[in-house]
Image 1: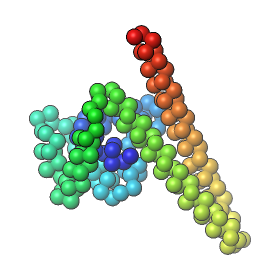
Image 2: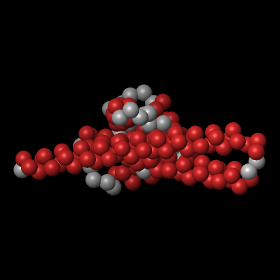
Image 3: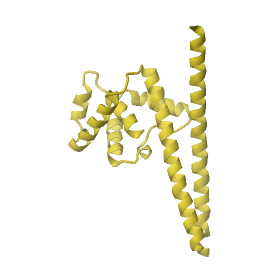
Image 4: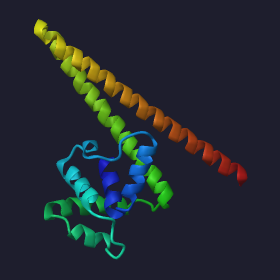
Length: 174
């Protein structure tokens, strides 16, 4: 998912503002480096966010050539992957990017929840009496991550449901 999102944003950097606006409209943070696991992906996002509004005269290849060599190589492979996808109108592409980012966050939160569960189990096995504060903090962290994941899951459900309704209405008109 992170490669898909980055590939499109490298190809069409002007969509980053739309993606961020949609995320804020969904009461979630805009795209950030914490959404990505890979160091190269984080660095590419930083490059995208630090670059001023895209110059319409620059081709994607010209923009990629301005990147440091190692990042440019990774960026080219990401762009090549999305170039093989069917083209979408900007509105649908932005919706797809928002949905992808929400799914990515849901997946990342699931991994973080598993990590915290492991830490809780480990602390329960050791049973150190002076580590009660740490265990309490882990349980609080688990509650926060779980609430965030439920919120994202609800957003995805609503977006899927509203998309299905719009499709049904369009089909009725035909």
